[in-house]
Image (tube, rainbow, N blue to C red; front, top):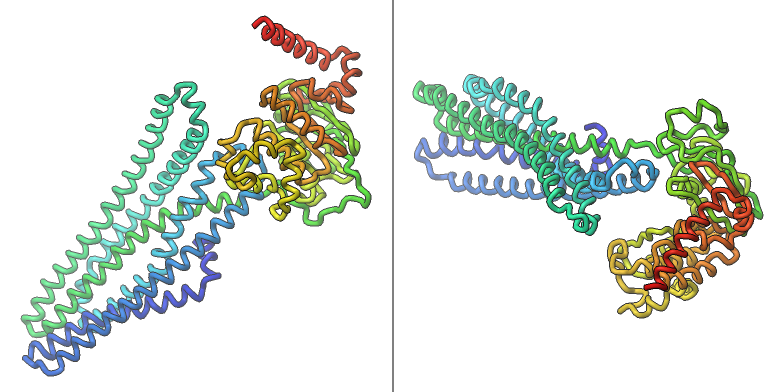
Length: 601
């Protein structure tokens, strides 16, 4: 709770004004029953009408003050709540951007969306109708107790005799409801994760006819969420009427004891009426506090998950004192005895893991094992290997999406962990097989790395990679809207846009990950021509499945089971008759059979 209250500090002025409004409103409510006592005892009981109209006018004035105070309280608290929600969401989103890819590998998107949306909304209820309002309720309770004791302490003690019952009920409610709401929020997160995954992959669901099976699975998750909600509703539904029943018991005691006192002449009728009104007002904030306690328990469960996310350590962080690359640096890349496992933590920078029996049989499942190679400035390097050999991992490590488990990666002799993270990633342009486009316009997606890029540069980049042809045919050209993930564009069009995006950012090093494997033959001709434009004068690292796309590279690296097995030009590797030769032979035979089949057809 203390950590949550820290978010109120920037808005202490608004909260202070809300507290003033609460105190004024509470005082106005305290005065109203007492005016009834005065009206009955001084005027009505004595048959005196003179002055009664003034008392009625005073009562209306106090009601107006109470209305204005409640309006100010509601407006100020809602305003503060919205601003706190904004701050929380920005803090969560900012932290999400700093977390490494490894975190997203193990946390579903739907669960994270729940943290930013539903959980923050629950905390808004806490700030708008919880924390500060409880102070008002406490003020009203204490005020009523003081007034009742001042009017007749014996009758007040009779009314307060039911307070131990309220304490027992509240203790039972507090003990059970928090765990219940924690379970509810957990199932909401699971529902969001399931929906996000299945809606995104709906075409695959329909293709494999899994609608019925997935519907059954969702029914199970939704039923668990329903049951958890029903359990929490049980506690709430029991608590609120119980408080009302205790309040009715207090009123009955006041009527019994107070009525006898009126008949005995020790209590006035006006005081009895005022006591009954104070009693009702006394248990009303207790009832309200029961609901706010419900909000508090739900908010505490949500805050646990939010702060767990905010406390997630940033493992891929910019160095405190970044090292500048040497003057005249040319972008020389070196992998120096690099080891990597997704399930192992990075070791100190100075430690180099060396191949030994202990490492080979250790717990970590190493994806890369003692990999060393260099990429000289302007050199074009192809990387090949079977699926799971570690090709894409090399790019992920070079971009510092992950840190190496052992060894080091350097650029111009400087360990990349000592470089400014933004500067490091600004050196590279990345083109993936699965192109990710954001909602927006064509132009915004091309200038993704620099929104200040002028229109001419965007158009020149698109023209250079032959993307301008289909862009100009779109209804609004470069201002045409792009649907989520570019769903309205073909695979080839998205690929050309990714080339234009890379060229527009003018990277020093170009990295290609299976950039041509998902396009048709006609589009591949455009893509290959675009690649020649992209690679001109740039260091290029290309991961390829089709060996024909990297035969002209200056150097080809062959990975096998996480190790660098072969290195050389296309001709040199064929001459070695090793792994590369076998891959080439298998692929060439497959392509030949396909061509013969097409000719026969």
